[in-house]
Image (cartoon, rainbow, N blue to C red):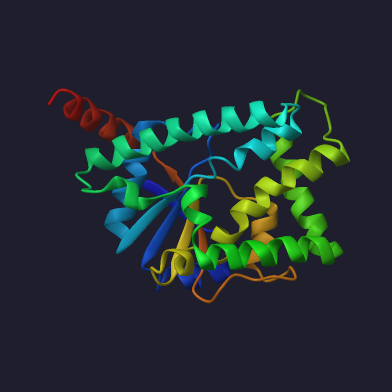
Length: 239
């Protein structure tokens, strides 16, 4: 049903003992249809003891600001889109008869109340400020995000990167220790794209490394997986 690839050899080893999956869902990415979210949730709940969906909802305002939105408008647009994504995930989980979908969704408001997340976020900001190698790696990751949103042949400015990197730093604690943040044990972060920063990170080539037991999976569903869950959604809607 899925093509599941550990990002590095270290991730392959971590996968053997993982009991939890943290599925990243980008707020403005059309890839995350409700059908795909159902398929991902069903896969995660079948393969792991537990799972969560991570939505960097209000943090998306940082990317919007980098693209030229005024701060107030960026926050409003990010909040509205974030709620839309939360609703899609809730629908997907209810399709699978999950009793309390909200418990499995990690938005920024919930994470900001999490002590482990705040500890890791503070460390990420401190390292980005103090370590040139780590800062450049984070800026390069933000460059990759902006490249996909700017007009063709347009390079982000240093100011745009400075604004956008806050989004990446908000995500970074989940790559470091999603199991510790959710108190779920060894965990695999799940996304459908590899990222150069994360390949280096999970190979322990940067000044910061993942927590013990933390890994990353690149998960892409096969076409028939989405078709199967499309039928399930239709059935659920007609009840």
